[in-house]
Every structure is written in structure tokens, then in C-alpha cells.
Length: 456
Image (cartoon, rainbow, N blue to C red):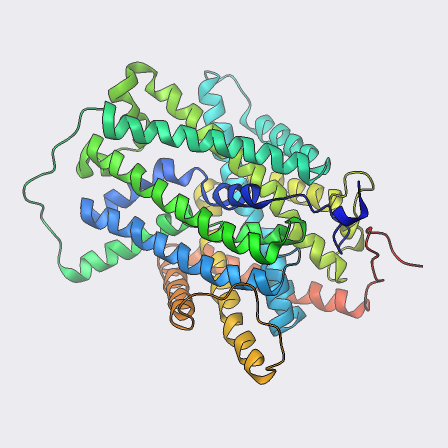
């Protein structure tokens, strides 16, 4: 391996633009798109409002991509939001993000999807598998692959991501072209405006959960080739691809089932496929969901460990977690930490409970990270000699302000829908203050050389 292939943090720089796009797509598309169209249709009871909700979620994701693209251009370093908040608002803000990401947000989302993967794999096996054993073995296998280096980890997630897109393409084709179409009712009863707004707001929670995850590509910025340019472009392209896929999936579901039947089913993917493949639809749907879940898990196992790796390099986490394996140049210890904690959450929690933690905390930090742009642009005006970033968020400050406002609204709705679990999530955030003070008292960490080993 050439010295030029090793970044300043000791990690191997090996992710090009196409792989970065797949990282963005893989971070967003999980299992939500296979189930959440039914939840949204049940809430709004209107095909127009259902598509409007998915379109609005896409707009929020695109506004977020604008913000994160500029942040990536300004801070092309491993760690994503941890770096943005640390360098804008100070180390406590960065640490609290990293703390909740490790304990709740990233690992919680990964644990929820791992549960879904184990359940659907068990369906394919005829109910003869131990789902707990599937959770443990799968997480261990993905951790092992990513400990072999970013080339192996990224190669696996790209391959699984392409397979996932192909499976979604089959679902879209079945709904649009193969399954019998349900005619749209001539007249649809619409609820009063306050009730409709409340229903629409509730429907946005599963929608934004399905669109979340574009930001995880920023965690590996230090391993992307020319991240100032390639990561910004990948965020735009990846989010645009997902918006198109999600809208087509929902159109296919509405055409094949109709809004009333879609809102009543708990297995929309199976119901859409049943019109074209018959009795095999249930197993085919389970296979599609299991594959999509595995692809999401692979991407999450690649990106998530980089946050606690960055914290450890700053001396705000166990120093050993900042170590880099000699041959693979991968954050192996950080990867094992994330895999182990995800396993604990997956074995002790429920999907719906974990989900309520993730949405509330995710959008709190989305809004805080986006607010960094206002501070950074103001600093830039005060230092005119500063070199401008390679990418600037279009239509700032309006686009950035709209994303912050949307994040605040979603946090509010998550409190309304899951008040107890949301409060537990914020209690976990505040519990991060004592560990932060402890690690800060330990003093500055030893500087780390380019190859990840302490300097004498």
C-alpha cells in the first residue's frame, strides 16, 4: 500500500465517487420503504396526501443533503457531525452527538434493522431459526468483514446495495405493470383541515425515518478520494435516486392495492407481489426485506464506527478505540465496539421502541448541525481571506433555515407520538455530560502519526 493511500488519520483512502453514491443510497434505503407506505396510507387515507408526504420527506432529505454537502466540503474529515459540531460549537457539543450516536441513534437504528433481518430470515427458513443467534452471527460477520479494511467493507455494501436496488425495481415493476390495478375511487371523503394536518404530521414520522441516513456517508469522509468534491456530488446524486425510488414504490403500491387496502395491510410488499407471483409472494417479500436489511446493516457497520474513532482520537473516548489495524488500515476496535453494543440493543429492545429513540435524537442533531452553516458563513465574512469551500449549499439561508425548521417540527411530532421514549432518549443525552467531563480531565491525547501510531 502506498503512503499516498493513507489519510492524515491513518485510514486508507479508497472510496471513489460511484462508491460514495452507493454509500448515500445504502445509508437511506433500509427496510422502512417495504412497510411504511402502508402506515402512511393508513394515517392520511388519501393517495394524493400519501404521495405528498413522501414528496415532502424527499424535499427535507434534499435540503439536508445541501447542508451536509457544504459541511463535508468545509470539513473533509472522518466523523461527520461530530467534527462539525466540535469545530463550530466546541468539544461538548461534538461529544454529546457522538455519545448519543453510539448509544442510541446509529446503533439503535442498526439494531432495529437487525431485528427485522432476523425475523424475515426466520420466515424464509420456515420458523426453524433462533432469531437471537441470527442477530449475533450476522453482526459478528459484518464486523469481521469491516475489520479487514474499507475496500472489503465498502465492496460488500456496494454489492448488496445494487442487489437491493434491483429488488426494489422488481417491486415497482410488479405494482406498475404486472399486478391488477385497483381503480381510484371517484370521490374520497376528506377530513377537516385540523384533523388532516394532524394525520399528515403523524405520517411524516415513518416517512422521515425511511429517508434518514444520508448523513452517514459523511462519517467516512477521510476515506473518500477528493471528499470536498466527490462527497458533495454523491450526496446530491444519492438522495435524488432515493426520492425517485420511493415515489415509484408508493405509486406502485397505490396502483396495485388502492389507498384503502394499502392502509389496512401489514404486509404491503407481499400484497403487491401476490398479483404477479401468486402464493410465493410471502416468501419473496421476506427475501426482499431480508436482503435490504442486510445491505443497510453492511453500510451502517462501515460508517458508524468512524464517529467513536474520531472521538477517541480527540481523547474523548477510550484511547484504544482510536487504534488502526496495521495491514488493513481500518478502525477495527471501533468496529467491534459498535457491533457489540448493537447486539446488546437488538437482544434487549423492540423495533418500535428503538425507532422512537432514533427519530427524535436524529433530527435534533440534524437541526444543530445545519445551524453550523450560519455560524461558519458569518465567520467567513469576518475573515475575507479564507478560501471558500468547494461546494456551497444552494439558496442558503432559506434552504438551510427550512431544513432546521423541518427538523424542529419532526422532533415535536416525535414527542407527541412517543413522549416517554423521546424523554428517555434525551435523558441518555444528558447522561453524556459526566463522561465528557471525565475524559476532558484526563488531558489532551497523544498526537497520532499519519499511520495511526502514537508519536514518541
